[in-house]
Amino acid sequence: MPPFDEYQQKIIKDPAKLSFEFVPQSLVHRDKEMQRLFSIFRQTVEGNMSQRAFLTGNVGTGKSVLSKRFCIDFKEWANEKNKGLEFVVVNCRARNTAASVLLKIIDHFDKGFPDRGFSTTEMLEILRKHIDKKNVNLIVVLDEINVLIKRSGTDLLYALSRFDEENMGGEHRLSLLLISQRPIYEFLDPATLSTFKRTNTIQFENYDKQQLWDILRDRVELALYPGTIEDETVELIADISSEWGDARFGIELLENSGMMASEENSEMIAPDHIRSAKAMTHSVITESIMTPLSDHKLLALLGISMAIRSKAYITTSEAEKAYAIASEEFEQTPRAHTRFWEYLKELDGHGLLSLRISGKGHVGKTTLISLPDIPSTVLADKVRSLLKSRGLG
Image (tube, rainbow, N blue to C red):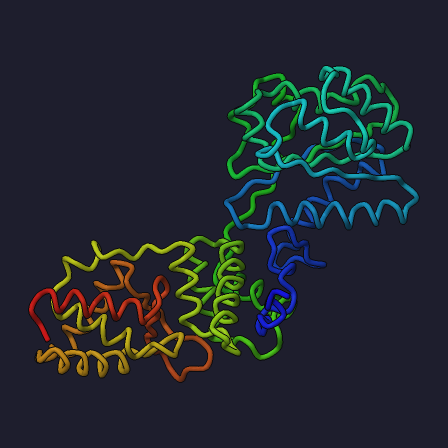
């Protein structure tokens, strides 16, 4: 028998909770967007009106997961009011033609529907019959709609937006929820544009560090075994991912660092696991950035990489002491405090380390240093190699 049972996962108890496809029961810091979406769509149930809304924002701001959570909850709400409601989510990057989108929608009602042999007009009519037969309202979610428009134009979007026009005075049953990183209005022709209300656009802003901390803390509770990561380490992940405001990136870092910790047979996710995951996922540290640095800037970086090895953050006082030790190792006289502070600011500007003012848990205002982009051991090895190539040590 293969020895897979020996590879016990000690960190991640439920990997599915870290999947991009996972839909939490509640979404952290997206109440306002959820309420806005409900106010737009409630008339589909209470007034038999079709609606169209558009979600836009950068990657990792919660557009896709909110659309799924909304549809799940909205269907339950509609059913409580004895209104039939269904929804279909279509990823337009995977299905970027009118036929493939319609096949996905019809498949919701008819799993055996053939994948060829029908025109767009025929499939729209078949969809209409399914909706009428089940007597339901349908919300079609078109995620990454910009890809469909770029690949196949706006004909399908126009047809779906006018789907209920023939029902003069009757029920309007098909609503659209469109998702894109960029506003799509500039890509729409005037006829299609006329079917959409610009006021039904919901902008998703990037998450800030505190919001990312809350999201990550929620996923830690859901996905990890208790006691396998410290709050300070979660804060490091939030700090790194706040550069882009991207919750997906933060969750990916959490997952990858948990896997690395397990592979090392560690019982906890350490700060260097986060840095290793960052280096694997989105590293911006290269030797070309370090090569032009002066010897003492490199010694400062070496000292920091040694001092921070088992920590998420160190203080500037700890960093300066470590710089003095690194200077002694390479038989150099450390520079004065003012010059060392200048080194820190320049290294921060290069993205080789990160400076921030302390928050809770620290007395007074203290500047903290972190290494967001590279494991401390890897950085130390690179710096030592570079210093030795210059004849030092």
